[in-house]
Length: 438
Length: 191
Image (tube, rainbow over all chains, first blue to last red):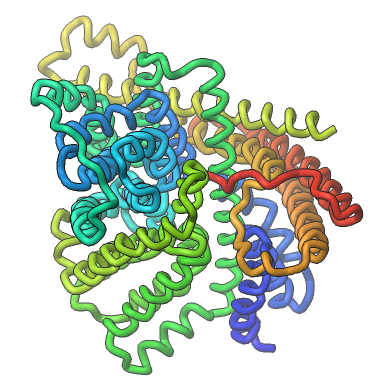
């Protein structure tokens, strides 16, 4: 076999492993290890030698250390009662409208997303706060869980975002610029979900109850109570853009800030601190093992020349850039139904990114990279709420056992439709994504 | 036995968490020091007090990035045993759900052994890396601490991870042999 053939055969081999329920990080690690061994005539020495520094190198990466810090920050924010405060404020202003409590949940998710880099954490924490309220005011089970699952994706669409950090490292782009570019699409997502809710309650009038108006004095009091969220967001995101500190330092500032808030609000005890550590540990370990496996596999793939050959082939075929982009995005939508977002990004970006970079979209290479990153971020996040294996759906359904999964599936399709409309708009008008960039 | 291993994994996770917090504090202190240093150097405020403060050595923490990187390697390796013990790794399970129960158990046993083998190889090679760094006497750029110290911290976590993964492979083997579920699946990892 030629090197190129070994590289191409590794795809089906990897897919078989993953579908046999081999953990994704391990599957990529094994495929990379075997692949490098085959490239070297069956000797594992090169692969073993690579491992001497590969694991230490991936785990001590300065940019990647953002990941555990953001995860800890999200947990501290929950302990500090910030999710509660956000929902209360949003509910005061929106709750009396038709479908208003669900809209408030979306608004609160967007607010929480601005201090949390993870979708599942946002979905889980907001569900704990908002689900009881939704049920209390007569919102249908499937509608409530679907709205929260969709709202959870705002955790990662609105910066800071763990997935964007990984994308930035893989494609060697500026993390701060990617965060900036994600801002308007993130707001659009929240607005889109709120519109979706207002359509849903008109199509299904029985799905939402009425909540009485809240007096303005109380509304303003609730709004004032969310000031810590604003302070942390401005400190972290402002500090990064202002060039006062690096994204990693920003994550440290955010973790310390939310930790202090949690402590001052009495949410941080030895028990909850230990719990924060174990939750952060599990999530971090999962992400970093995938990063390690993907690094190994991608190193192998680069050696086989598959990514370059593939991008050359696509360019010589003369497909229109938009066709190629559409195929890639549809691929992500389909695969997102099966795989988690981070694994997909780590697995596919090293292959797709050279292809997209080689095409002419009439923009600078940096703008293409950022625009493509935001589009990919959105389509992989849609995977979190698409049946059958949308992780957000599972997390929330596990909290609301009285709602059958099928009800959630039915209602969530409205939100998936809203996502697809947004992707089409962002593909047609790159300027929306690139607007804030200098 | 299970309790002991779970306890070990938790202790490692908490040690990793404490290290992470220390790194966060160092990073923040360094930002404060750097900012103050810049402010104090402005001519307008460079009075006696400013000179005195600068004389005390107010500034960024020397080698903060090196410390962060070395500490992070320990943190991540210390986090791994818990994910290993609690089935915390991401996988795709919709295609295996239709397999017969016994086949699923055997499949799982095989996967867990492959995982254990991979983690043992990772730990052994990390030890090799440590040895070569110790031989070369390579030190970090600013603080001049030997690079192998960072490797040693990582190796501690990697070793516990390897040990714990062998235990888990043993558990899955017992499950496949007896057909009984000894450990229920926990909720998927949060990310």
